[in-house]
Image (cartoon, rainbow, N blue to C red):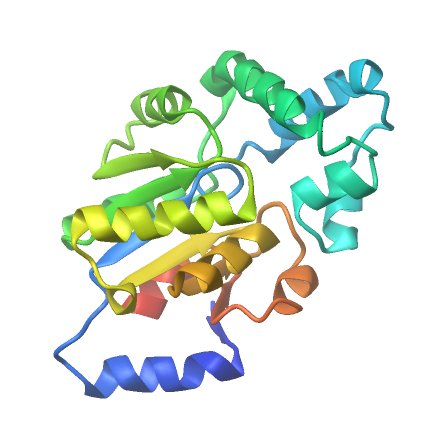
Length: 230
C-alpha cells in the first residue's frame, strides 16, 4: 500500500527526514469512523430520529457523494435547523451509549494503535462522542493504549479549540503532532489549530471529498499510517 502525499506534504516529509531535532511524537485520532467502525450504527441512529425531526433518511453513499461534513448535511440537506441541531446531537450521543457495545474497530486499527503504543508514541482521542462511550469501546476491544480521551462540542471551533487545549495540557508543539480523521470537519479543525492532518478515506467522507479540502496526507488503510511515520 502506498501513502498518498499532497503537494503541501512534500516539504513536511523532507523537513522530518533531514531535521532530527523535531519529530512527530504524538498522534491524535478522531474516534467515530476513524478508530471505530461506527458509521453504519450512526447512520441507523440518524434514521431512527428522522420522523421526530422530520427529515428524509440518510444513506452512507449519499454522505460520501456530497463530499461535505455530517453536520453540514444534517443542516442543509436533511433540514435540521441550527436551533434543533444541538438537541438532535444530544439524542444521538445518548443512543450511541446503547449501541457502542456492538461497535468494532476499523479493520487493522487495533494492531496499528498497539504498534504505535509499543513504539512509545503518545496517543490521544478527540471525539464528539461521550468519553464514557469511548472508554467502553476501548475496554470491549482491548485497545486501552491511549493516554487521554478529549470530548469536544460538535462544531468546527469546538474541535479546533480542543486540539489547542490538548497541546497546551500535554506540552506538545503543533509540529510534533499528526491528527488522523475521516471527516471534512477534521481537516478544517486541524488546519484551524495549526496541526498536520492525515485524512482517512475509510470513514464518513469520500476520498475525493477529502482531497477537495487539501489535507497534508491521505491514507486508504490504517497500516499506511505506520509507513507514513516510519
